[in-house]
Image 1: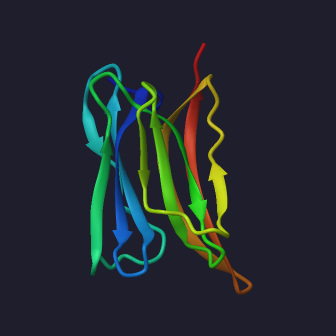
Image 2 (image 1 turned 180 degrees about the vertical axis):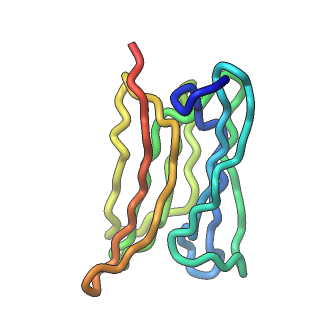
Image 3 (image 1 turned 30 degrees about the vertical axis):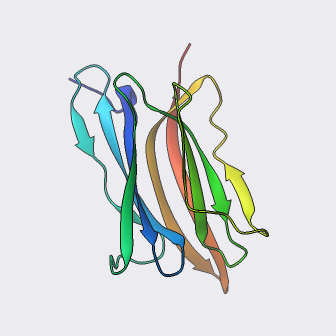
Length: 141
């Protein structure tokens, strides 16, 4: 029986708005390290759930590889502009372009952590827009 902590992210599907050139959402796919069971996570839409004029592209890890880190950029209007995904075997995938005045971020996953769950949301607090990209990780020794 597999536990939550033996999961690895092996694929991230990204939904890119073709008109406005921002990322509307994403979906991670996980594999159990112990049982090799593959399962898709929920689709996480940051802006809205409409798939009109949306192109889906995906980062797929090679066999025995998994997602090690995630970064990207947020526009000054509060939209997720780009994602940069790096695998454990140092394969880098970048989706979309960042604007000159964007805010760059990294989820700060260090060498002793493995991301095992990836999700996000878009919130509006007191007229200000916030994007939350969240992950859970485990420590390994």
